[in-house]
Length: 74
Ligand code: SF4
Image: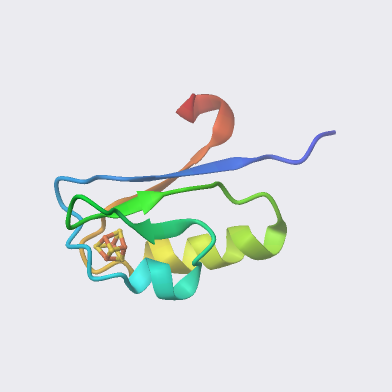
């Protein structure tokens, strides 16, 4: 059985760009250069990254992050 992969998404309409998520997982969340929102630059590929992304989803003050099973997010 293959391991379930997950895709994290950000809603740019509600993200405040303050960067709580970025402080938790810099390899995935980066500030967008041209806007005051965060940009998703990669996806969680290891269990450790996935745990940090789950923490970022829980800590996001605007509830702007969503974590979806990769098959349903594509
Ligand atoms: S924690 Fe949430 S609101 Fe803050 S930058 Fe990240 S996605 Fe945006």
